[in-house]
Amino acid sequence: MKKLLISILSLGVIASMIAGTISYLGDNENSIGNSLIVGIIDLEVNGENPLNHPIIFLEKIHPCKIYYQNVILHLKENSNPAKVWMHIFNVSDGSSCSGEEESGIVNIPRSDNSTVMYSYEANATCIKFEDAISQLGEDETIGLTDTFVVTFCDGNLPVSGEIKTGAGKVEFTINFVGEEIDIYYYDTITYKIRLINKSEDTFIFEVESIDKPGNTGMSHITFCLFHDNVCDKKLSEAIEMDISITNTSSGETFIILDFNEHKTIHDLECVYINLTTLDGIPEFTPCIDYILTISIHLNSSCCCKNKAISFDIEFYAEQKTGTGFSDVEISIGNLIARGG
Image (tube, rainbow, N blue to C red):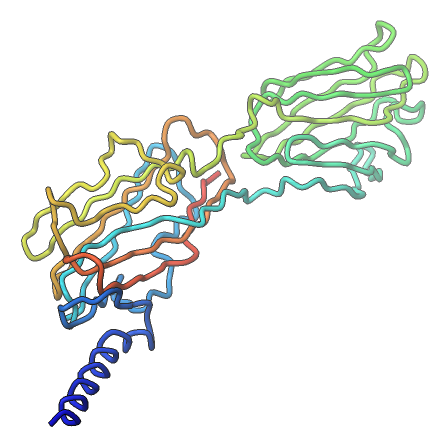
């Protein structure tokens, strides 16, 4: 009889191990502690288990508009009731415009239908053109115009600049399309600089050689964004999220994060957001769809264009009785980008 009892206990232990670990074959479910409740937690997100796609992918969001993302959360039939949390992590702020310095050679069109080779050095806020083979401002270039096309990330007016010749440097500022700036050397108008067009982040400048008082051939010209127009704010600090959840069985909707809380992605990173609260939904019940609605908008302090953030989202479900069976579904590669 003792041997038979030991055999029965062994079979019971094996069965318990199988119940606690079988979901490892295709998911991140596990059993912790010595729960007396038989079962598992098996969470689907948008019908996927395991979750293999981003749930948020917005390539061009704009101010004064709210974007909604609905996510369906569902405990499968064999699950225990569960508490569920949402967790944003791995937030990475970036830009769709390169902030790295670049340099090279470019052919600039001249008004006599020729092109002139300039070297250039550029970063996110400034570009310098110099060392043309035939410098504008030399005797043979009087009356000719060079055209410079410049693209800035987050390009807004005004644009500042500097023109340098053998006679020294002169700074200038252009505030609007069509404005023309006179550059003087020795009390003589030597150059005229005009902004002839601006289309989004691309500017077209003309520099005309008017006169040559002496040693005033152009050695370089620089165009720069004003620092006040360069947005240093991270996009994660400008995107706010509001969250609600709807029980499709009862039709009730509960607010998880209210619009007036103004919670940004930066605020929410690495915070576990409880989707099952005592005042709202105390737990998820198997076989019921819960619609998680995430509203996304830029707050009023955001001016930045051509910026993007990527992040991951984890959904963590755990049986309602506390430590025990759990399931983790992770959405990798979520993206939000600010439109131009």
